[in-house]
Image (cartoon, rainbow, N blue to C red; front, side, top):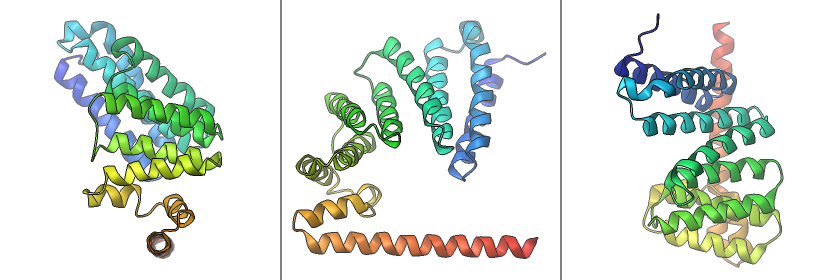
Length: 239
């Protein structure tokens, strides 16, 4: 029979989640999906007896919700967007029931859902959700340097661009740039390799900065293609 002690259970779940996240991060989303489903099955068994195991129910419920997001991400990476949306909505419903709208976890799920809707071409819905997440995060005190807030603004800008809302997109990118002005690492992540931002700058007359970003994107692409070619060559030599 399985050892349902608190330490063993928590360790098993954490390990399974890490395996899934690593699989998705290294281009193996089907394996990530399998790992998330296995961990979710275990959580489903544990939740009814969490108190008896000395595990706070809220902690286990929150872990289940993160696993649903992991599963949604793995499905999206396999271009199974409808399934991904369903799993993310499940997590969002659980969080809304437990924590309400104004909670960081809820906002994260809204951002995740916005991203999946964007990939389905549902740009107006995506923008609305990203803006709702932004409002929630700002209400919770997120500001300069917040990765979650930057993600919400970045998604808003992409959705606005896809709808041809040029002025709104420029305003969103301006707010994002202001938030990240003093954080080089975050700026590099969200703006300095963002071709959409470069196009927005070009349209606003900031040609030099737009060219700098476009050159950075091109150089990164060349490097990635070179790394991929070397990896494939090495694999071929081993066969």
